[in-house]
Image (cartoon, rainbow, N blue to C red; front, top):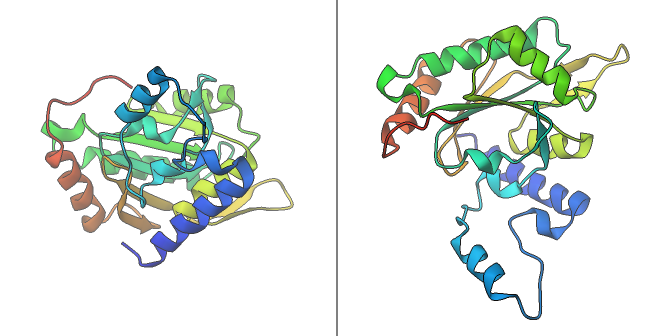
Length: 218
């Protein structure tokens, strides 16, 4: 993993705190006396490592219009990338490469892998993203989501993905595939091109290491 990524996560966390408040980065609001039920729920919540992308708790909305947090995918390896719905060439190829990466995992472990496709275009509505799902024939293991300009910028910073809006309304952006371990830590990433051997091995290793049967839910 690139040495710049921990720094990128730190910058993303600082940005999220400034934009959404201190409670957005794995912290709970301070109370003088928390009710017992709340304390119990807090104790049961999983503790994420500091270098977890999930610890940022970036607020998103999925293609069904429901609130979504990447932390919902914790416990399984994840392939994550960022696209925008109206991209004519690069993003469809990036989605294809993401699915090729999943398909490279041995069949016995493939069902453990989830995919997160997050749009960096705030104008990509849930309905539009759902149309993207249909267009590419993406199943329940693939999660499509978008968010506010501030929210997706935080996530892009954490993943070291660069993009900018162009005068014609399109976006110039890097094409990055990232593999997250079950705790949301970046274990491998690749910029550009079809999935290479290192990226494939990283995902296969994470999928094989996860104990228990594959989850069939979304």
